[in-house]
Length: 252
Length: 79
Image (cartoon, rainbow over all chains, first blue to last red; front, side, top):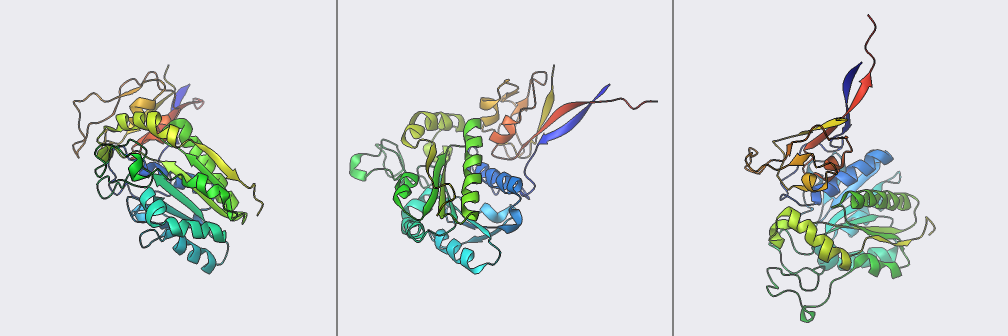
């Protein structure tokens, strides 16, 4: 009897080259991996069109084999709406946006897409600051967090963090909102199942689906990657709990 | 006895340590004296005997740098 090796895990086939240069410890490539794996498992890669926002999500479609578009800052839900309405054959349309893109500049786009009940999926990657521009205060910065524009920590005078999945629960046009933290193995599997459900609800014409995924930003938090995920576990998860906040179950 | 092994691509590894942190069998380590061509510290598969090919290191790797192999028993072809 001899032993053979069987490849059980490698990069998804939809991933073409290798990263476009994210910082060590960033979870944006994990989101790429999740989206690729979910599309492969659901056999939807040929029908999927993505829209990347501005920020660290900008190069999302540079190295994965999915049709994608880039658009003006915050406007990804509007562009995705146009793509969804213009294409024949029920495409799967999703956006990849950072928290600054989705919650700050694009907040109005998200709320209006939700009010119209557009059948798109919005994936927001939340790293609690503006990562691309040097770690300034973002709408999702948690209380007490030190950023380059809040050197003494965010206090009540600078407002409170936005929780978009919870906020969208009250909108009638929204079918599914959830949040996952794919920096642990359990969170990774949870994120995968939420993305799958979101895509299913979209294809079932249930309404807008929204998934928030937490990410580390070690250089801007001035931590090592391992300190960063420890900080996420201690500080960020209590503020941004994982879970499904609304699921219409496919009914409109 | 080992039930699998991993291959870490040294061109891609950025030494974030997520694989080291989450490996349930503590098979991976960052020794600190090996560097990638880009200058990052490298993660090294130090305990091949304990690996059970669970793939968690592969899920957690942000750089798509880890391939996981499982050993399968194959019949020896009869002579």
